[in-house]
Amino acid sequence: MATQGLFEIIYQEHSRRVYALCFRMLGDPTEAEDLVQDVFVLLFRKIHTFRGESAFSTWLHRLTVNLVLMRLRKKFATNGFDRSDYRPGR
Image (tube, rainbow, N blue to C red; front, side, top):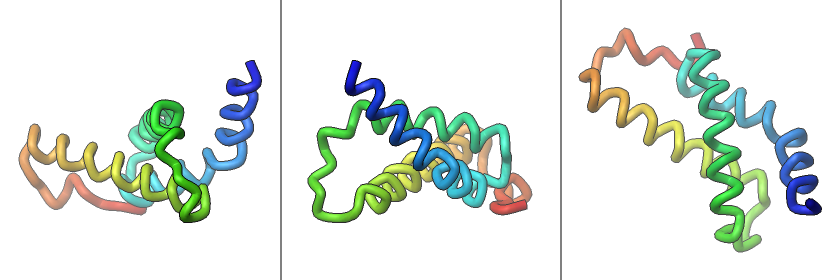
């Protein structure tokens, strides 16, 4: 149960920044909200890989960017690239 409380604290402290980054990169509030959930699920699975060589927020930022980029690659591979689809920070 202590782990659950820790992840709740991490979510409360970092979810707004993660959302802002996702929204800035994707330009779609609904998709950004979905990615926030995905980021924190991935965080739960990957937390053991955090080595403490950088700030936790830096590591989480990189995790978020990588997940958004993977989503964009998948989206563009499936639908083809159309510049009108990609408008970060609309």
